[in-house]
Each structure stands twice: as structure tokens, then as C-alpha cells.
Image (cartoon, rainbow, N blue to C red):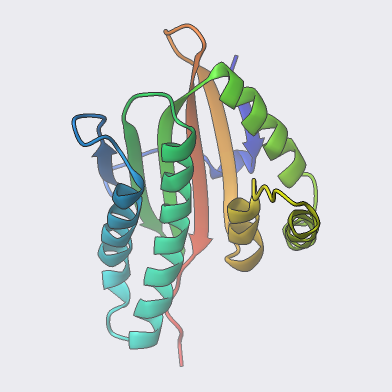
Length: 186
């Protein structure tokens, strides 16, 4: 059974204007280094359309890079062995990205519980509550802070689709995100 969390209309059809990057498992393994390198590459690629203004370019590059890095880091951190696929496009004044990977059943349940919590209220308030709760605990768990920061501080819309795979106890996770990027018209 397919399960959706977040903004239902966010899931976008991949068309001709989409750039796709695959991170494969292999001798080097997919690691944190690949997250930063891949997100920097994607941010540079999509920020080029804003190069006529240094400010717009820097804003777009930063926002896109932060978003993509957070999503790829989550995919690397919580994935079952297998590839991670990143698909990205700019439609009108929104950067959209889809990160696909496979997770195991236990991770699926834990992540769905987290998503139920962080999508239940206003992101800014939930972010403050999470930060305060982490400060009060001796062993801080920052689960959800990155996603809440994206929603609260970057205006990101997020959606997650969990679908069964042919392999037992593995679930295909597709994370969708959209953030506004536009040129300032001064």
C-alpha cells in the first residue's frame, strides 16, 4: 500500500526539463562527502539562471544547496543498500527536487511516526519546540530539525511517498520538495 505524507499536489511528473543524478553503491560506498559534492553541483547548475545578479545567484545557490544536501543526507543516513536518485527542475519560480531511495521496514515506521509529528502543526513553532526539547535532554536527538528548518526558514513544501517494493521488508521512499527561487525585480 502506498502512503503519502505532506503536500499531496507537490509530487511532480518528471518531464524533459529534469536533471537526474544517480548515486550508486559500490567500492567507495555512498557517504557524507557525496552529499555535499552532489548538492553543490546541483545548486551551481540550477543557480546559473540567476547569474545576472550576484545577490540572486547567491540566494538561489544557497537555498537549493541547503535543500538538496538535507534530503540527500537523510537518504544516505536512513537508506537500505542501493542507489539514491536525485531528480531536479525549476518550474516557474520554484525549484523542485525528488530524492528516491529504499528503506527497510523498521526505518519506514520510525520515519512515518516522525513525519506525522512534524507535519501536524506550524513548522516554526514545531522547530522551536524540538530545539527546546533537545536542549533539555542530556542526549539530544535532532530528528526532524533539518526538515523543520527547511519548512520554517526556507518556505519549503515537502511530501513523502512510501511504496512497496518487490523485496521483502523494503520500501521505496520518494521525498519531494519545492522552494521558491526568483529574481528580485529592483
